[in-house]
Length: 171
Image (cartoon, rainbow, N blue to C red):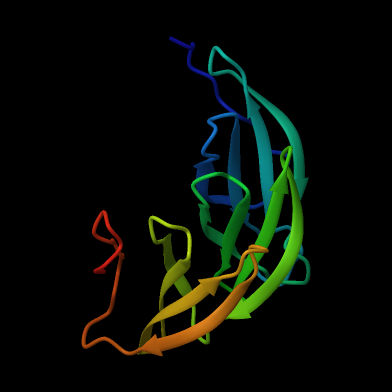
């Protein structure tokens, strides 16, 4: 059992979320920076066999006022999708050895709140809400990992989360 370990971030933002890659070898922490700055960042930490963390890198989504948040990996860890709360976008990246290579970005029209992939990694579902408008969007995951918009529906109530049946047939 690893000893308790705290991380002192070098980013000036507030931790807004975290995720471990499917292999269990890296932890990613998303930071919101002060509004109007470029200090929003994603920090990458390696996880050793004892559970200890070592910072490897940080990167930004680019631009002023980006807001990295909900993040989801494909089950094989080959691709990752990061919701940008401030720019109303989802960013697609190819992952190789912990290096994120940008693929594309898609608009969510309003603030993306939750994202989940179907069990086959063929569709990404995103709930979004802002200013009284709520949507659930569907994006098709291409073989390259890039996303293509399929549709948006407006539910009767504000979606706070999204879950799929194990076979991915129902949300």
